[in-house]
Length: 272
Ligand SMILES: [Zn+2]
Image (cartoon, rainbow, N blue to C red; front, top):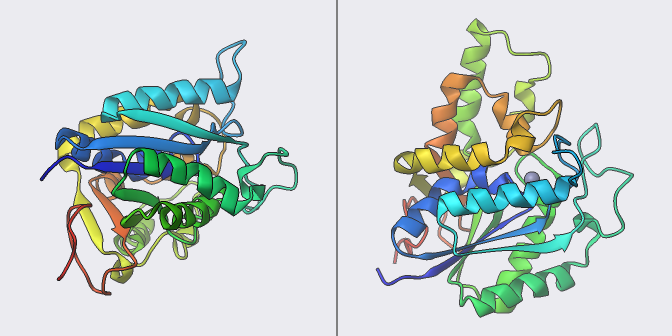
């Protein structure tokens, strides 16, 4: 396979580690060019910062570390404000003027499309329309990313997601013998991410578990702080034995393939 370019579009530093790190490491190992773009520096995440340093600065440093481990050739931040999350989930009332959620879709998409064109990207990853577990910035990644691919004519668009079926099955089973911490609510997973029947790509990334763990570890400020509804914090509440299930496979939905398509590589064109 000749080298191709894949752009991974994420909302905040750390999202790449959870959802697409294994795929990124795999493509880089295969000789492809892997580019990481975040919409925001994640400055409204957990505030576990070194003295005298702004959180956005810390999180961008963590992102560069993670990107280096995964073999990324380029890292860009679109520079929008982290919209944050209200305590009930959903859009926070207090948010910065330049919050990503308030961004003009066309303008943000044009900025991303410019990178896609420069890179002659053949593949772009975004999120499912629900934005995974529903963080407003993640929903916006879906909208902006979809439009950017249209503008740039990027042929392959994959929605990074999680197969919620086995996750829910195991969580319910585990709930019978294991007392989840009170802040862990299995029901939040019932409408999050994607049902297995809609998933077209199941990428086995067990061989890249070391890089994926290292990418997650790079985001120390988000893994060690207090309460948060961030993806990393939400996922860290998943009990240990379920980790392998969540992290050994990465899942994507490619909407222009016929329903029921099952492929294993991001560049697999699917049934003819
Ligand atoms: Zn995020």
